[in-house]
Length: 332
Ligand code: SF4
Image (cartoon, rainbow, N blue to C red; front, side, top):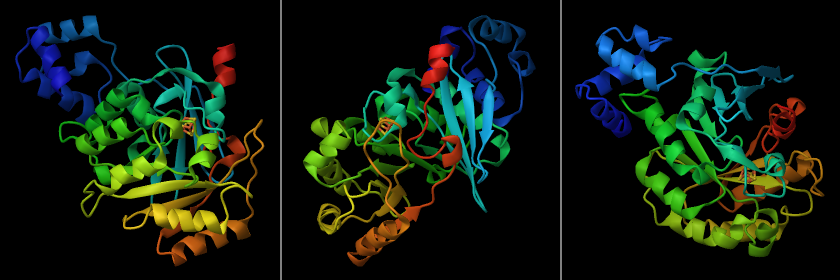
């Protein structure tokens, strides 16, 4: 909002114009600046000179056997991003991308193989929610698509502000979860400025093992990430969860269970166990169902609330860690 107020001032327009514009942008269904009828002709002309208005449509949609959809969107910089829509009985969750590709290099992630190809603007993040076929039915949003949200902090925070402010889409922050691999400064800034839930990718509690899976461990060790979280007051409604991808024979032992219990002791949180989806070119393997259930049960016995996240959209490469638009960039 402050950015818009600054712009209105710069254009020499009355202060209340900012509120009028947000009402048109986020509360009403219009498709051009000329439809902002309570703005003066001069104001509309000035805005038309400076801005393009409207949503960017998707260029492809794939539908999984389980109903999950994967949308492909072009970006301003002529690249492509992917967005997943996961339908469940009583909700429709959109998994948005925050960057084109990613520079974090996690060993198990297909997006990492694409490398980093650019940041998304707040508008491009929101466009992924507003330009899909289910736009009017979205109940939940997760920032778990391509990219590390806190490596694009300003635009991610701006998008969250637009989604949750009264002057914006007025969505409850309790319906939004932002996932990070643990970039501490960005995480603290997010916790301070926004009320949405936080999910942290943990994957192993052991220092060296995590470093091999996730290079970010060198700069921001998980021990420090958890310490920061433990010292934060989350209130009663805000949730903190940890994502744990299970790899066969790597992070599924009883030592992992004990160390996780030690690391997370005293913290009110939940672990979401995710089965690894094989990525071409990695030596990592998927565990079987029995191992998943056993690991879950052992964590629950230690008092850590743990659930298994159902895999969705694997057949169309929409499942966790499988988003990539590398080939499209090359050919596009
Ligand atoms: S898991 Fe997330 S942070 Fe890691 S490389 Fe993939 S997109 Fe980036």
